[in-house]
Length: 153
Image 1 (tube, rainbow, N blue to C red):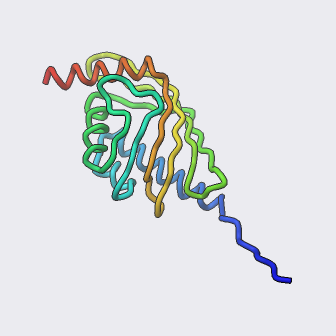
Image 2 (image 1 turned 180 degrees about the horizontal axis):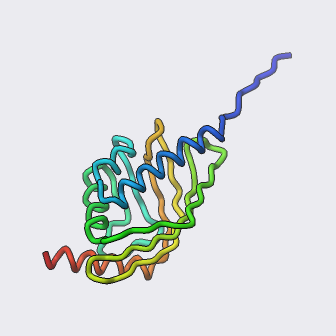
Image 3 (image 1 turned 90 degrees about the horizontal axis):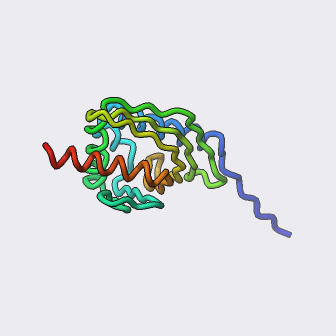
């Protein structure tokens, strides 16, 4: 009789690695350092949203598209605060769910607040794919404000 035994993934180590990468990427984004933000992403990243809003693409693929999308948000924000961050490691060592509350003070005076849940898939220790759920009405107001500011400049 043969026995096949596979070693379960070390989920504690995976969670620590994934959370560290997530936090480093987030800190860079909130500081407006898009190059550092992208350093935590794979060579062929993908970002998608569950609830598309007018003016923002529902799917962004590739580093340059990510740079354009997130640079616009970082440039529009005078300050970004994220609280209540909870990282939930799944049984797959490369997949976590992140919950967070974001508050951003935009340069034009608007205050953006939203609760988010994000499925994040890692590849080789880097963020490879994000699928984001957020409050759609608040995100539409953000899109309208960011796009108006971009058109004015």
